[in-house]
Length: 552
Image (cartoon, helix red, strand yellow):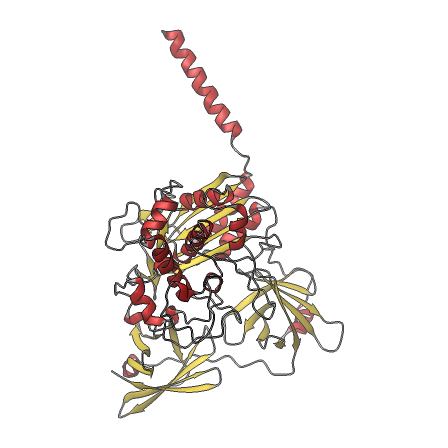
């Protein structure tokens, strides 16, 4: 009996040893780099993230950082469940392609085949246009979302909400990210399959792939391991509530990083649709003028440091997400977070690049370039895409700023090439002639724009002044820009906060007692007062002066 027990111990040890040896090799140095990047991004006392990295079909890294519930001080776990936002679009696109393979529809079908009374304004709008964001239909998230965000709506009611809006452009003529298109696709899935969108996705995808922790999101249900959602406004706050009937087929699903890996694995193995059918979703389609959109059906087709990849992110009240797959290297990276304040896009791309052995340039040493040499690059540059970029020098550090945006540090790769801090853009200067020329490359999308240094003076930075809170209170209120589109001015912690209907929140900074500016983009507000109270405000943006009367 003792001998048998001893033999069992030896065999158990051998099994453990075999398991350890057979695990895919993963560089300790690479793991430390992943850890360092993520710990800096997702602090132990703040909102968190779950990150999974897989290579050659095997998980090589799976960790969680930060807190899943800040109020209860609960650490994030790798099996926490998150709202994945627009990564939902991948599932909607594949559901459509599943129905295509079943012969129930075609991506060339016009939407009026399924919704006969849809007002197309005489234009031919196809399922391809909806899938590819080239339909021209107005995206409902650009409308007065605040008035309906907590309202439960059927797909038909939601479509009725936006269908009579003027089209942004003719179908196929431009590309513009569009949530309305995916709402219509969800409705078409229901009509063709005779199932709700929720049931179709859960029965034909989640259950089939054993994605046991994935589901259609519902706010009122108890969901085990759900990470609480947050946003920031002078510190963390609980995220605004949104009825999950609104994101619907454009952004309603919930999942875990492990389940998303199951999803990608199933796609790779053609479990749901054929390889040639999936390729339709991963194709970089052009618009009418031949320019490519860098978008397929539910996936972006951007490279990762020069290597072809498919990817997509998501953002919804309280959550952000990003997932990348690099087919040549069979590398998959998925990051899910529980705050809309700390986008995982850049860290996910950096990790993917490191995982394939092609890390983005990160060295920030200003070596071998004197301040005098750096001064050659300072100036205002005009680019062929009409963008103005301003390069300045302070304390031997170059900064680049798109007009009206935030300044980023830029660091030298060599004496004429510079890369941006915390994103994937680069400058390549030509200083061989009297006129300084530059090529700006967005390494994320591989889009290139050429520019030239002008004689225009560098704009003087606006200086923020201090104003008594009693004066700031005079501006608090709701101002109507146009029916259904308001500007809401609130006061928090002695600072004025501005939010347009359905838009992000921005602090506005005083430069005089009545004039305020936005740091994040070129816009300013000028309040008009009568008898010590603001009666209207003028929005200065894009060369326009837009008046807005105070409602209350």
